[in-house]
Amino acid sequence: MEAVFCREAFRLGASGAESFSREGFPEEWGEKWLELNGRLSALKPARESRAASAALGRNFLAAVAALGDFPPLRAALLASRQSADAKGSAIHHAAAFGLAAGALGLDEERAVLAYLHQSVASLVSACQRLLPLGQSDALRILWNLKPAMIAAAARAGAHVASDARCFMPLLDWGAMEHTALRTRLFVS
Image 1 (cartoon, helix red, strand yellow):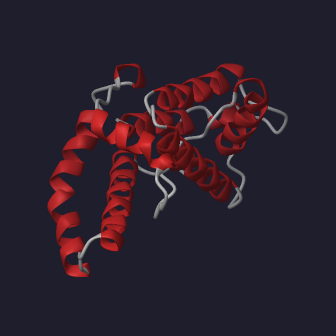
Image 2 (spheres, rainbow, N blue to C red; image 1 turned 90 degrees about the vertical axis):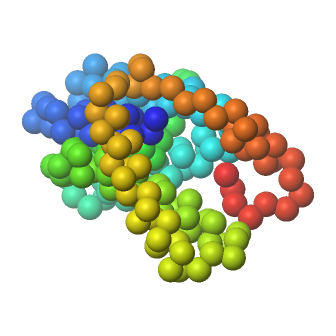
Image 3 (cartoon, one colour; image 1 turned 90 degrees about the horizontal axis):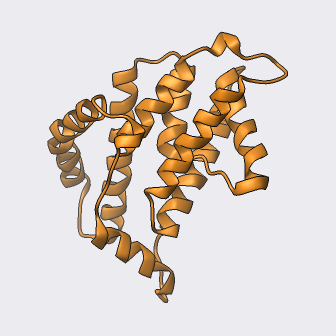
């Protein structure tokens, strides 16, 4: 699901950077950006996973925007800031990653694969802290998941954000119960 949003944000970041000016950005562009992130928020029913994605996304986008003059990144931050007062806009990690890769002129397919790889690597890293899982086993897991990541990236290319669905009730339920735990190792 997140690969679909990463890909759509990539296309948004890659398209029309020349139409941005120092004073602003096309209004419809900002609306698309906000809609993309709003839709992804709606598909994350657990507050913890939604908040974690939004924190990662905003921090990632701000860090990349600080590297140079990238009008789509500046516009995304501005649109989200302006919207936050009115309706609480989030910048999700998948969308921020895709937007940044598009604005930087990277290859779309490689950008989506890089996003998927780093997402899975983060999960495997968390498993290493929770389970008796060594470095060799962690690397083997990542290596064995490469075909699944490639397939997910390819499937994401055949969909748009309005088609994206994700049904994982046990994961969402567990995440929703996470706030009630006495001891928590991870925020999300």
